Length: 281
Image (cartoon, rainbow, N blue to C red; front, side):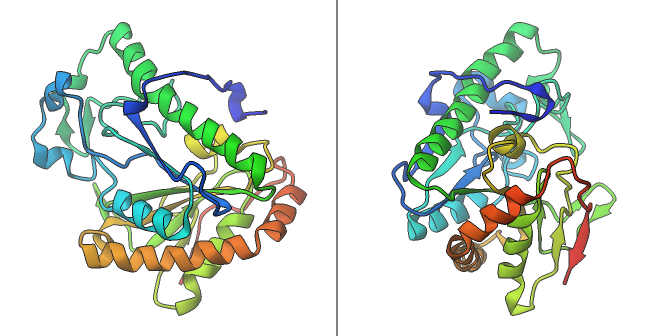
């Protein structure tokens, strides 16, 4: 398997308390990943010195997305892999050399438990929480691809409406790097009602790298993309149910065209220039 930036897959027997796998034998052709599913912190870290209120903000969790993943995975019988601990403990969607892997401050909020970490503590968190999650993702993809010749990967996230001075007026947007075939199909499926403002590689762009997607799909032939839903859509159970319904319909559409998606994805060289961020209304 070829991975962007020559980063090798690391296998780890790990500790399965750090990761949750839903429907490991699920029959739906799409695999769902959720890097920021929880605000929990292991007891020995004393909430990293933060209040429960701060941990439950967007800095600690992708608000509402775990509930959406559970509803969609259950309805579609789709395999899903979810983190069990907060992104503030360690962000499973960052390259390990990225200074944002473990933040001492996020959106203006200091994280005392992440200050002045020793290399030993950093490595401990990688071994205990990061690599076991990615080992579970790797195993889930391998198991699923062995029985589904046209598997695809969707990584689900939510984001805050406003980060600092930046206001996001999108309702949702895709994230992609190697190829845009799955992204375009997902945007088309989500946009058919005409009531959403959708971003293409926006509000976050995957061009230049998006860790989980690139790490597990780059060079494999498997179409993959992320989706960011603005979290004010997911703040209530009604909002979560609404977006679950939208995604169930959209992912079912992707499943029906998965062979064509594979053909389009694999007919475009990763070395060819791809267009960057855009907006679809």
